[in-house]
Length: 110
Image (cartoon, rainbow, N blue to C red; front, side, top):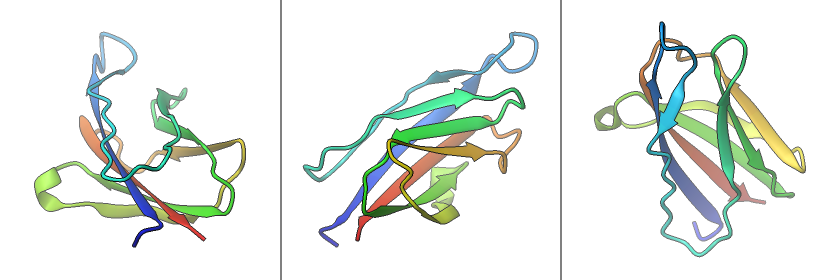
């Protein structure tokens, strides 16, 4: 639909184990629409889970999809995420041990 925007970005875990905390490479956002997308920040908490944070857009809901292999497509991680202006935060503790995770954040205007 015209009111739907899709963001795709890839997070690759490096330096796991003896090298310490994760380092993220190849953070890329691609879009085929002209909407103003929020900045998405990916960090790591004390439990080594990925924490995704983005600027909230009032009146919208979000669905977060993930994939560990793009050939297998995306799976819904969680849906119905309501905006919490000024910032939405989601912690991924479901895919521990995956060295590469692709996230797809879907924004649907209400």
